[in-house]
Amino acid sequence: MGGYNRRVKCFVTGASGFVGANLVHELNAHGHEVRALLREESDQRGLEGAEFEAVQGDLADRAALERGMQGCDWCFHVAASYHLWLPDYAPMYAANVEGTCNVIEAAGKAGCERIVYTSTVGCIGLPRDTTPTDEDTPVSEAQMSNHYKISKWHAEVVARELAEKLPVVIVNPSAPIGPRDVKPTPTGKVIVDFLKRQMPAYLDTGLNWVHVRDVAAGHILAAEKGRVGERYILGHAEGNLTMAEAFALLEEITGVPAPKMRAPYPVAWLAAVFDEGLSKITGKPPKAPLAGVRMARYKMFFNPAKAITELGLPQTPPREALADAAQWFHEQGYVA
Image (cartoon, rainbow, N blue to C red; front, side, top):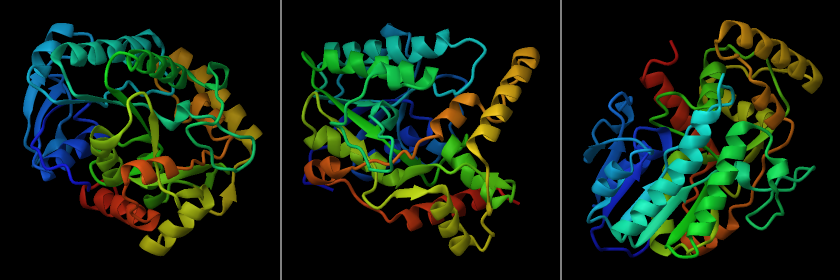
């Protein structure tokens, strides 16, 4: 992966998360030194077997950030608060927007040579049809369909503004799948529900499926080769699959029959409205957040040609990514 031979000291936020943990393992594989920002209560199962120095703190703790980044060459800001429903969204905005500002400014103060900010394809424009979009597709805040997307939109605006004076590169992962999805992520949960045969029907949406190992590698390549102020979609050129196509592949891989029934969007929308109404009474998260149903209205197809051409982004076949994810969930006991 490129010709970067120097051993680099790296600071990683969000190291216990899905992408962050895979990034730490990938940095280890390339011989780089890792310092990881971790909260005391964070679930660190994804980091088992990894070598890193832990720094206790969070995104609001500027002193911990500045202390942890001393002597680091690269900073990877992967941490984010990702929720499609919360009783109060203020903490998510604080973590995603103010936290991003805190991390990037601390990295600048520490003299980091490269600062890679992990955004999301949710900040990339979506067309009305199924044509894959890219980094140059027009987009505005008005197109952000939920609080998570709005918070990440504001965070990316912060990152772009700071890139005018600091060496910031932005990456926008699509829908990563694969090992170490401990939580699991919403995309991982789709695979788990499929494997457990708990998906009688599905929404007719689509995602750009990409192996999380390629996303982790893309972060390192962005630090090595990315142009300051630019953003790069970390996805797969052949990864734009509808849910039906992804389920057909999973059926081939696992032998579990794919669901045949498509849920009409209006029915799913009404069910989500009802579910969120109950959540306001009980305080428990809805099983199907309205924000997720709204996102599913569009085929989230993307073109990662820029990252492939400029960075050399690896392209593990989507079938292999799905197989690795299914195998990991089986091995870890998520599926009986």
